[in-house]
Image 1 (spheres, rainbow, N blue to C red):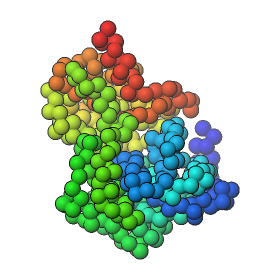
Image 2: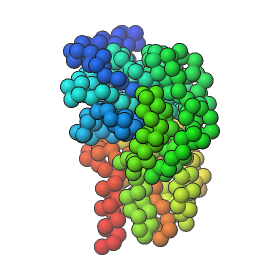
Image 3: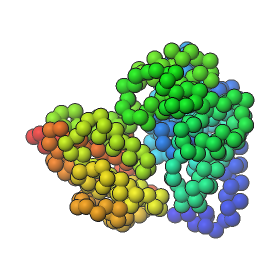
Image 4: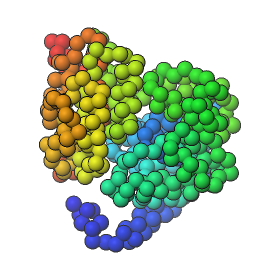
Length: 400
């Protein structure tokens, strides 16, 4: 509440300088640790977490000790702990402390997710990035940035700051914008074109979905940029069985229940397309909501439209309401759905209802939170939550 009031009262340039100075002092206190590492920043709308993990795997396969920071976890060498911050890119002091710990642990590389919100608040400043990676771009954080172009420009500021290596998905319609930024070397990737594509990087992933092929190509491109042989990179991405909460199959029989983080329209549609293609379900039963706190209200009815297009049964529920009225969030999603659907605000009951509707050969898709261990509710509180555990608990109730 106090933070919101300060933001309204202070001019934007004052707030910007405040964030800039925080970034400087964070780096100063921890001795500018990024100067002793090769830091790789991954930005884009979707796929950042997977690309970070795949890139780290490629670098490790190349014989390097690696640190990685994603919305899922903090990892330094073999040691890892979950990211409980509910932030894709932590604050400046936390990032600099992480980089210092990576240096102290003898890491050669650090791979970071870089978000547009983080860039807007200068969290990327005073980090010497060796490479910048662009995954894809679709509308997100539109209210916060004041339009899609501003959102795109925020992502572009990472590429503007990184002068050494750029890695760009040339299949994305915004690729040309990112290719404009000068770099010592630019690597491109895509399904059909680019320096790295599926014609010259033949591999077989354990992870499903065309979007994961793109993620793997991005990681391989980074590996190649660091002098790691293509075969080494291929083996690394082929060995990844999956990531927590990313199209994770929690129940396999007599029907499948899948938990996924998808929160953007593109990500949700990509997930549904993959589930239909890979499993040919008799019914696709979908459980989802949308984040509160005034975040991306525009996309709520769009998520509803996508669900109507692909799902046989739809159950709308609570996600991370923050201080917003959960009923209003669900009502906004409903505006994009014309066919009959259910609204069950209690997320546990909603998941239980979906599982109860499922028959052999069906797929239940629970989206929006993935492996997040908490739910953000009113008053700044966070309650313990894990969609995967809730699915298992509700499935046991059905079986008993």
